[in-house]
View 1 (spheres, rainbow, N blue to C red):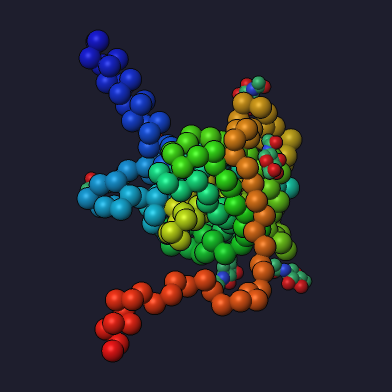
View 2 (cartoon, rainbow, N blue to C red):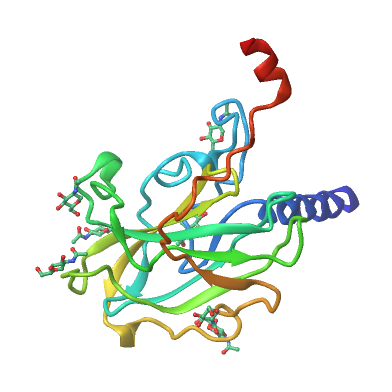
Length: 214
Ligand SMILES: *[C@@H]1O[C@H](CO)[C@@H](O)[C@H](O)[C@H]1NC(C)=O
Ligand SMILES: *[C@@H]1O[C@H](CO)[C@@H](O)[C@H](O)[C@H]1NC(C)=O
Ligand SMILES: *[C@@H]1O[C@H](CO)[C@@H](O)[C@H](O)[C@H]1NC(C)=O
Ligand SMILES: *[C@@H]1O[C@H](CO)[C@@H](O)[C@H](O)[C@H]1NC(C)=O
Ligand SMILES: *[C@@H]1O[C@H](CO)[C@@H](O)[C@H](O)[C@H]1NC(C)=O
Ligand SMILES: *[C@@H]1O[C@H](CO)[C@@H](O)[C@H](O)[C@H]1NC(C)=O
Ligand SMILES: *[C@@H]1O[C@H](CO)[C@@H](O)[C@H](O)[C@H]1NC(C)=O
């Protein structure tokens, strides 16, 4: 018994370390634990498009047909204190594996979060009213999938999804301070498109390279 509780302590510690380095959709939930790295997913499951290696699920969460909350633990990679976030919707179940045909419907413009430090950090943020994608025409009872993409500083992306069924807002418990909050030390930036008025800041050719040219 003692060793069993020691084991759970260890497992909990391990999970919190894992969580600190990946995307976990804390509300409205996720397809399942895809925080593993093993022989099937040698780089880690969450890097797999479109849903971090997780197949479509049937334990769908009810989500308001008028849009609703999405809460995340963004996690941190060592040395990467910022990340870009995308939140997309895929409609229906006519695609691969009984999921949506694609995840091509953005719900919010891309935004950036800024963490407190370069170290892994288990903070949470929540957008209480994420709208449906532009021109969406869903009705109560329709199925869809919400995909969250976190782009690391080096450009690679982590994927996590949750399968939902649209519901009348009165049938979905409202979020509150327990399941929808912002950790104080995560900041947000808009991402603007700015035309370059100068060449990209590429490094000058190194002396060794020019030596080769001679
Ligand atoms: C669905 O079930 C899986 C497997 O039990 C679980 O890990 C996951 O959290 C569930 N998702 C939701 C949204 O309840
Ligand atoms: C790796 O983990 C995934 C998810 O749990 C599982 O489906 C897969 O079978 C595992 N691969 C190996 C080789 O254990
Ligand atoms: C939505 O998904 C659930 C669970 O997978 C399924 O039972 C139901 O038939 C689906 N509804 C529609 C309209 O496809
Ligand atoms: C994406 O899926 C939608 C259905 O949800 C479909 O109407 C649309 O044609 C698909 N887009 C592409 C590029 O396949
Ligand atoms: C939404 O529909 C309007 C009118 O048809 C169209 O002009 C607009 O481009 C659509 N927006 C998106 C994101 O598809
Ligand atoms: C917040 O909402 C959850 C889910 O509906 C509920 O279980 C919890 O009791 C609520 N917490 C508070 C403080 O109201
Ligand atoms: C968290 O911060 C974002 C960005 O400022 C904001 O849109 C959102 O409403 C905040 N969430 C809560 C629960 O206050």
